[in-house]
Length: 335
Image (cartoon, rainbow, N blue to C red):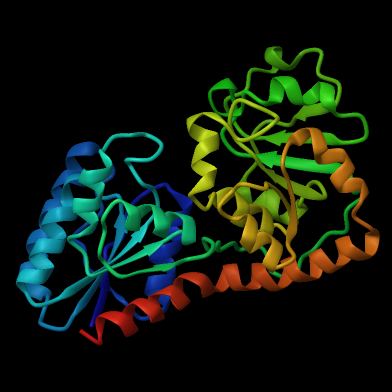
């Protein structure tokens, strides 16, 4: 039997994994679903105890990581019952937030039987830390939406760029230098955290506030989705920007599910996936952005849109997670 631990989280990526697990026929291994701190603690504690009664030799438990203090006990209880665990990594605590040391994270992930990581860069990082646990690459996070997959609005201009997510100087300091670089492009911002008073005087960046994710997917505002974080227009620097060297931003999946080809930093870990699948362009610096867009012919852009349509269908079906699970199960079943 394959079990999964529902996350009871507002995090979209984690909720989608729960849904794909359920649709694949995996059984939920949880008790209740508390929303506040104490209730969550009790839920996870009871779930860990329930594993002692329900798990049997040969069972598999899918765990989404990080799971804070409960990750170790869950892996240990599963092994005590003769079951195995497959861990899907959402975030590495030792890399950006530095809540763990590299050695602590390696030791935690050593408790599981298989690790699904974001991409080859993250896998190499963990291997270099000394992690011996078998791993495979997710490639990209899947994204489920209620909006029909075939909905693909035609763009009005090749120079309209969308940027969605958490906004503000802490994560997006590059905005303040970016406006002066633009002449033909318009950057449309969607999200919370930006004070409209901060953007007075910007000529090429428009702030539209927060809109629901399905509304964004339905209307697909823009021609491209920009994946860029950090302090500088020249590269993705700072803690947020540097993390792009190793992780798969969920924002990329969001844009693709909306039917938008993406613009990505050339040093980002997802750059090879974007190039190989013909779903966007990469730039070394945002100073190169308008020239890069001007080199995209209507025919090439239409080719990207067709490729995006193929990928977003796969994202909606959970293709990448389920493919990684097949690899994980094949590996642990050989042991």
